[in-house]
Amino acid sequence: MSMSSLCDDELGLILERVHDPYDRKSVSLVCKQWLRVEGLTRLSIRVFELDSLRWFLPRYPNIVTFECSTLINDDELKFLAKTCPKLEVLNLSLERPFHDEFTTVFDNVCEDGLCALGNGCHKLSKVLLRRRICWTVVSLVKLAQNLTILDLAKCCLVTDQDLEAIGGWGLCPGKGMVGVLIPNTNWAMSQLEDHQLGLILDWVNDPRDRKSVSLVCKQWMRVEGLTRLSIRVFEADSLCGFIPRYPNIFTFECSKLINNDNLKLLSKTCPEIKVLNLNLEECPIDSEEYLLAADDVGDDGVCALANGCRKLSKVSLRTRKNMGNVGLVSLIKLAQNLTNLDLGWCNKITDQALEAIGAANSITMLNLEGCSLITDVGLDYLATGALSRSLKKLVLENCYQVTDCGVSLLRQMCCLEELNIAYCGRKVTDIGCTEIAAIQTLKILNLSWLYNISDPTLVALAENCQNLMLVDLTGCKLVTGAGIRAFTNHGRVETLVLLFCYKISGNDLEHLALGCHSLKYVVLDKGKKSRIPMMMQRNISRFYDLIWR
Image 1 (cartoon, rainbow, N blue to C red):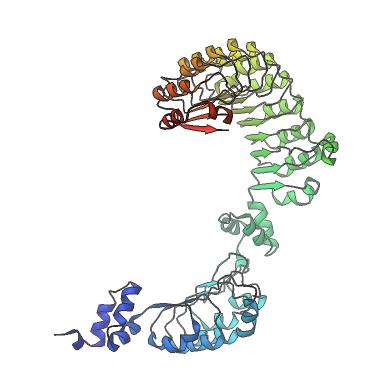
Image 2 (image 1 turned 135 degrees about the vertical axis):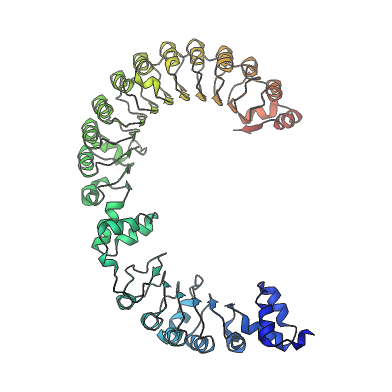
């Protein structure tokens, strides 16, 4: 028996097992019979050139999927409806049009084409009309009884008349929204209760989509506000106008000036807040904002927040100059779940506030950068209180009244993993820093620009801090190669920052490369690059990366 003796049905059974489009195209070139049967068994087609549609489409009467992403007119759709009555999926999503294509779209497309499809293709279940901006879908919806999915994203001229025809679909066809039709029912989105609609909105995470949702109707606006979890405010003056819409937010952010009255309103309206980020943007001294800083949030506002928002866990008040001890003490006592506290550059914070912070047992991150009134007494409160058993990160950068006495006390912090005492001045020396080496949990240590730090500190760290992974020694000009070589047998250190450490040579770096197998990066200033031979740099780079800054 030869292949030529096979009837169309038998040949069709063979071709059903051929799925690759290129293979099917090759099959269709064998003979006229194979060409005819390949067309009869084709289930999907994607068209790029509509000029030849009438010539080749009759070959494929049984297709169930038709795709076209270029401009198509009503006459071609009518021809498609007559030729391919078994269509189930119609994807006419238009590619992003050029400016000159809009005219063609408006001139050639109207309701007749969709009406013909609804009449001719009764099995249509999925229709995608994305960016076909001038179509109306009334006739299509009425005629296609099996329609389950309709994509009208960016069909900006869809009207209320279309939505009335769609019936069960309550979503407006906005950006990125796909409507799912539920035929043969009288169900409508307006029948949903607030909590049911809230469950739907929980799946909408994009802020722009949520904004679009809130414009649908008053119910959607109300529910969108009730389900919003975070908000960022740029104009604090208008806070009273919109914040009552969002009573359940967990996160509140504002980087502009905000006064005590606004925070009092916030505390009454949003008692569920857990994350409060009030980091203030830097503003020029001669700017209007700087002149108005006297009205910025202070103790009264923070006290109100502490009373109203008892679930606060992360609070950042960076650069809020009016922030003082009273508000902070109230916050510490009332916010029992507080874990992160950023008070960077709050210049009015003193040791009195640190006494209250030291008594807290939940704080894991404390940033006191630039709090220039803090002294060794304050560090004593931190090191001997309940805080010492929970704190994992402590930033004391630019606290220049701190001395060796205060730094030595930090050895009592048994959980501390990250410590930053950069720019603390000349009163911090090897005496205090060698005591830090007793903190065996320490992983990250920043000693930048401590001019009186030298090799004994590094030796103590290398011997005792076995978990240390990063050490920043920028500007520690007394550190020599002997101190760096102390890390030769250290098993965990990964990064050493040695910017402006002028007493370290290429030989020291090479010795470190051969002995410290955990080391991955060493950061050096560009001026040192010319003083280390290129061959030595290549040898070192086999073991860890040299980063030049």
